[in-house]
Image (cartoon, rainbow, N blue to C red; front, side, top):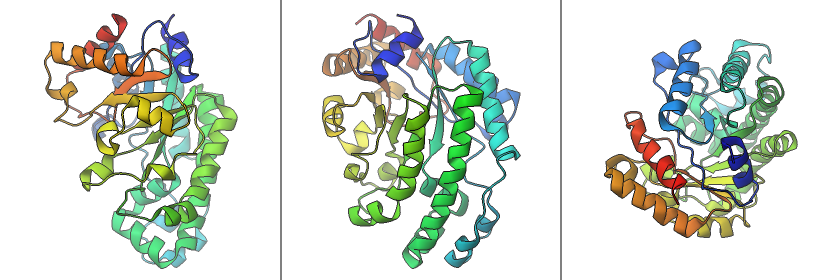
Length: 322
């Protein structure tokens, strides 16, 4: 199998010759726009030899709707308008992805990273303002998230059909046990999530649901994974060290879907601190647990920016030998 064949098989719950792996990181602000970010992605891919490339949307977090600028009261959200589909916020992302896909020349699949509408809203206005607005007027926030979802779907359509990416890495957040009740989440957040996920799955069979554990880890809690259990996707990326489920447990929880993960992404994790032998032994342990069907090696979330790429390459090398 080549890289493309191997990953497509893994994403569709088929046996592979060896377990593929893909890890990712964020990029520094000085690399967020233009040709430098394309080169940075390709260098990371070559240096680590990962089986496919997750393209970052660094530099395009948040959403440039005028109603979100200096938001004071949620009533302003009833006036939110769509962003220009031909404006730089969308077009620059499409051109970035298109160039990366072109340069890879079919060598591997590409997955583009996007956040759920409520996280996009939060990235624009901040945690405190998000919670203030949704507690004061949840319908206003839901309207804003619906508008963001519609715009996001236009971006997704262009990423798939124009840029040529194979799928979307859809990051869901805000489901920490301490933030919303399960009922609140399903009422206030799920509708816009579903709007985006349904569209993603209508244009791609390589969608990945990323159950982000970043904020849950920071807050010393975990996620209401039940919030996302029935969200549609080809595969699931999960935070094993935050939400306390191994690969078999997470696959069972998500109704048999392929799972992508297994490694702690934090600086305390073995990938960051371990010797080459320790990292490779962990690879063998994870593969013995997860098998060669419906499993992709990866991190709980983004790796520290200063991690040595050779550590990721150790994982890929070890997987090839198992």
